[in-house]
Length: 178
View 1 (cartoon, one colour):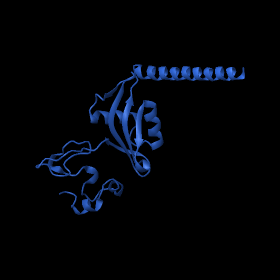
View 2: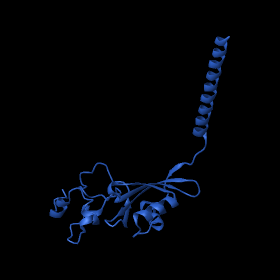
View 3: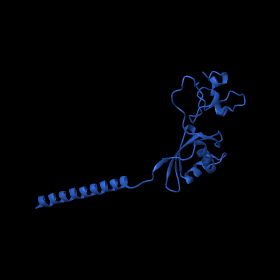
C-alpha cells in the first residue's frame, strides 16, 4: 500500500513538472512571436543626429545632467574609458520606433560636455591616391587630408585634446602624416 502511494506521488510530481515546463515554453514562444518595436536606421543625417542630441543635452551639461536627460529622452548610451566619451547607439522614440543612431558626446576634464561627433570611426582600405589621415572620425573624406581640428598642429591646442590622440608626439613634430 505504501508503495502504491509513493508511486502515485512520483507520478503527480512528474505531471506538475511537465505542466510547468509546457507553461514556460508557451511563455517563451509568445514573447518571441509578439510584435516588438522595430529597430530602424535613423532617418536623420549624422549632423542632424548630433544637433537633435545637443537639443536634448546642450553643451556645458555635466555628466550627471547628461545621463539624466539622455535617459528621459529614451537615448541609450555606453560610457567610454574614464567617462570622457559617451557613445549613443539607440533612441527609443515616443511613437514606438527605435532608431539606431551614431553620436558620441565628449566631456572635458571637469566633466562638462564640450563636443559631439560621429560615434564610430571610419574604417576601410584607403585608395592609392588617398593619404592616411584624410578621413574624419565619421568616415567621410576630408579635402586635402588635413588633420581634424582636435589634432591640428597649431600651438593653441589644448593638452586635454592630446589625450585622445594615439601618438601625440608624432602630431607635435608633424610625423603623424605619412
